[in-house]
Length: 197
View 1 (tube, rainbow, N blue to C red):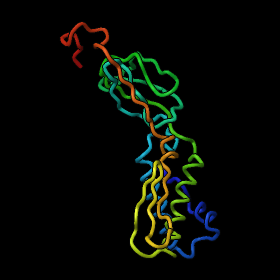
View 2: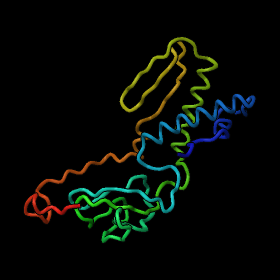
View 3: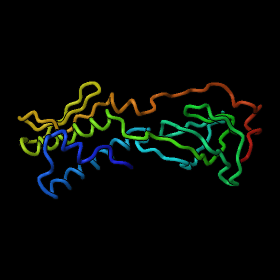
View 4: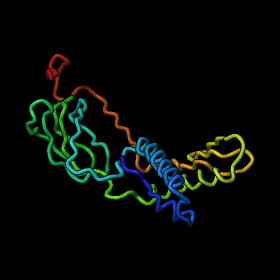
């Protein structure tokens, strides 16, 4: 997965380049660690993937949701076993309909952000700058505090913030909706009529 900030971003934020190769490597480590956390938390992809192939299973209604938004286009929906195109409809946003219930398909599609959104880039940079400030000024045990959507970890007695990841920013890139479908299985009169896959 892509790093969500660069050493140049850190340099611009603190107003100086890394002192030496060791410090530059440390900045790179922080960038990768925080980027890994954020990439694992969100549903969107912060790198653009063209003709990515993902195996997915439709629900009982023949609908499947495409991960790794934003979705830029669907090229092919194929049976996972035969590789043959299957009848389906892409809604232009984030789901495919018209599949058989519980069908397993290989979807070839393009998705993800062409570049890292600025709010994510600034969030990563801010977290790293906070870590660097603590390493030069902080002493004592670390304490954690969560209020609403904001979580902070700081050094006791110094107030230096280690991590300040705003949940509201990250949640813009997480699918927060849930759909409940009530009723019987569509198109089937009993469980015995379900197709064998």
